[in-house]
Image (spheres, rainbow, N blue to C red):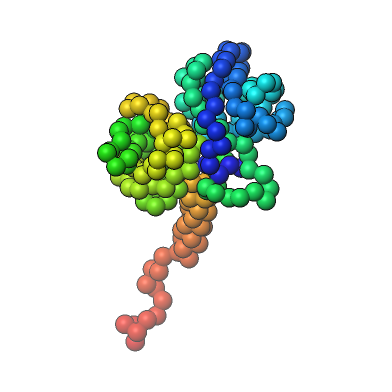
Length: 217
């Protein structure tokens, strides 16, 4: 599990195509300080498994499904990325519950003079995005400032702009979006409950009016 508190800005130092996807090599001295084979590190919000570490760098394998669904499809040497290790049990919970499972890609639109930043999002994610709710953008835990049918806004403080890739994003850039997983669980459970209620109501049948009522007296 992750919390969306970026630990450091890393840099992609190698991209190698493989038969199953690609192997990325990323420089990140902080997150590799105690990393070992099999550990999870979020790269721009994508949970990836460390396959090797050396000299302040780590390597991860990215399968085609992940390339298809995230902005890592356009990964290139020299690109800056947000890095976060999986949260340790008992650690400080600074952001919100994140899995590192990207729900879709959005597009950076523009930033206002007061650093309110606008992103377009896929329409199928709209039902999970609410004002003052949580969302992860490129692995950064953020609070939604506003939302309509096509775009959302977040207010970015100077620290976030300086210490994450969001301060370097240009109009048209793709970003990884992860909506609040709790909202998806609530939706699924509520839908199941509504279906059960509909079936239960249907099992009682329809009153045909054949019973004796006061109008028959």
